[in-house]
Length: 317
Image (cartoon, rainbow, N blue to C red; front, side, top):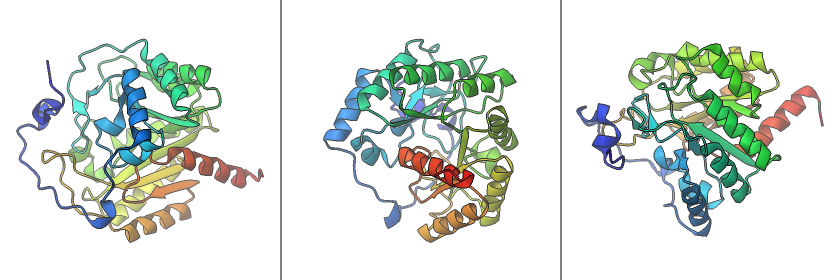
């Protein structure tokens, strides 16, 4: 039985790789250690409902702030991912279990107990399942709608690269409010950063969401500090807008362990501000670009701004 708390067992494919130095974080990356009553309550609800969160599994720097406010991003379909992206801290390998048929109900129960107005649901990649977990996503969306009809739902999905077109259709038909799939990095870095994925497949996935349901908000994000240059980031923006993506997130890559991809550099907040200005200039409805930006960071507030931006665009008060 694997102990996923031990790095060598959590990421067996990285165990023999040479260590990459982990540079000291600059002052603008520092965050407070998690704690407090709100944090403890959120943690208790997650444990009582036997749920996994990407906040913990990916080592998110914002977990203290978000959980203290009762916000947690639930990760469905287990805690072992069938991919081995070099930036990611989620455990990798062959998932030990089939999908849990009762998980959608437990997620819906947790959303109700937390009183969430907006929830983000993500997952591991499950290339071992024929539809990549699409039906499980759809069931989770429907379960939340049943228990919390006023809660808006954002999903952060895998790429369904080994599935037929019906997989994506199942998820879109369940009508999440926001469909997010992260490109993660610029195309030139895919072979070393995201080797199991394909840049243009991910882009096309998001474009197809808009074709299936033009009213659905689409969202995608990348990390910087992996070795990309500014022009490559600007090109990704242009590619995203060509796919009619509404919302862009850009955050600093932080290296989880010495075995993960090295941090090339820490991008200064002024550069993030410049990226934000450039992205708005290209027509995104919403942009979040800061060192600590993550896909679900302030997602509820961002969704309200996203919806307001569309209403302004359509001339709706």
